[in-house]
Length: 79
Image 1 (cartoon, one colour):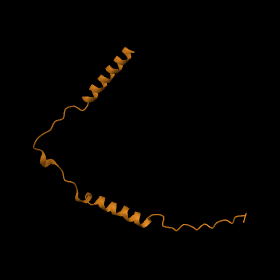
Image 2 (spheres, rainbow, N blue to C red):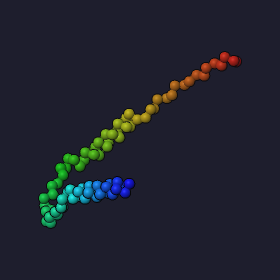
Image 3 (cartoon, one colour):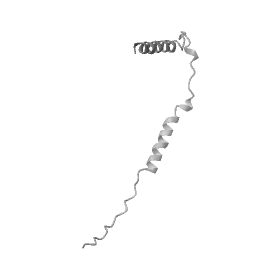
Image 4 (cartoon, one colour):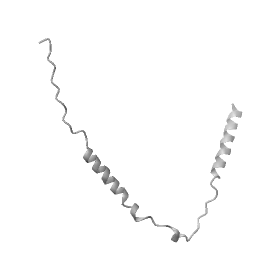
């Protein structure tokens, strides 16, 4: 049992260290602020338009507003 636990812990250690080093070093360069591209202006107003269309559909299609069909009671044969 101890050899199995030792083998599992060794395997977990080996796998975790290889995953930790998989990405490589991260290099951050200073002074590259001018390289950031701006988003196109057309994508900014798209989400509110979609939200308004969904809201309009919910109002138009709206809940089940039909009146329930009245149920007539069946005559009791004992009376």
